[in-house]
Length: 234
Image 1 (cartoon, rainbow, N blue to C red):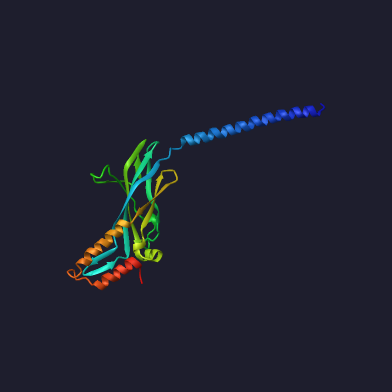
Image 2 (cartoon, rainbow, N blue to C red):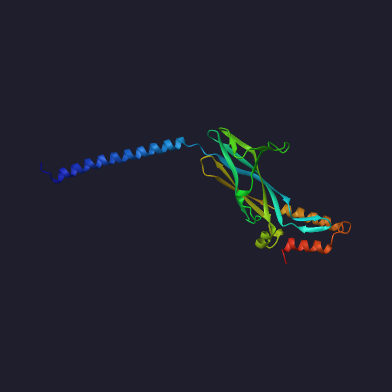
């Protein structure tokens, strides 16, 4: 059989059509497989921080045995009310601390070492009830009464090294993580202003100074402590 240019052109068209059909078929098969994989995956949870509060757990300027002291640890308690929803089947989620800013934590402590306490509190008139961490989420559950409570221990010398003085530390940012079983963690960060904590420290000192003689406190020592609190170590 002789092959002319017209015959070759017709065969080229036929093979092109066959190749195109094969390519479309492979793309369709790939799409079906991907859709099946997606349909088998659990829908991801939603996680967000709605509000946060911070308070002083320990530290600042303390008074004991006629002496005033600037504590070497500055420990704050961070409370976050979070929203969690689970659009899929029942699952569990582990809450953890992913990062602290500033990173002036006391020696030997990293964010992953900080325990996250999970609680439920429907309203301010009821005491919070402890929950497990990892936390169990029922199917189609929406929850806005969950609280995450952490205690963050800072090193005062590290704060002074970075900011100059303890009084210059004016805000703290905590990044929480929520890790659903089989999925990448969701990270959410919130900052808290420390102005009220410093105001309370200074108010306490002012009250003590007003009664400095009756409490047998050394005015010179109190002044030295205040200088370090405001200006850092000299």
